[in-house]
Length: 268
Image (tube, rainbow, N blue to C red; front, side, top):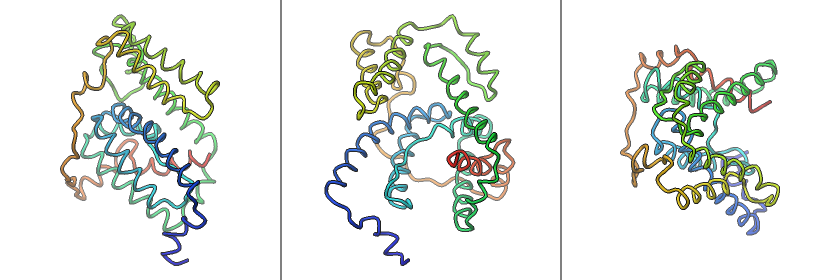
């Protein structure tokens, strides 16, 4: 297969009807992916604008260079526990280096066709890994759901749970009400509007409720992190040295090693 066939073959038998459906799907995914990327960035211990940059740039690259015309790219919560641990322990710049190494490992795995090795990973490993991530993400949002103040985040799971119980007296009822409205809307929307994403409606309804019914009573991204920059950051490259690369490979749960587990979870 020639490179032209690989690059433009996806447009064979492509019609205006297909373009219209892709456009509407892209708009819905984009509306959801941007706040989702900000939320994942915050949960990973970095600034919310980094989530916006990553969502936009990665989404474009996935769509242009992806291997299938029937795919969509977006933020994934599976990275949150890994990224947060790296940022908390080794800093943001080392996170970029670890991500760079993980990308190179993915390329090498594809070139050497190592994806077939996934079938040798025991199923309990994939189930336990994904279930553990779900529990960590869920418990990590308890403080935000109840509007707890001055909660310090830790790398260890039990330390974070202890922190929640230590600040349980600072519950914000308006935050609980906003979270309940959003959660209820997300769960009920598919029952009445099957073609409209529940998270999108939940985001809109809960935001309007907090802004109109009790303005200023719930913390927002703006009040917590300040204004989001209106322009792209200046291009810069991390200080990539052999010493820092080997340091990333020695992380307790490094991103390069995580690359081997993430496809395994997708395969399951």
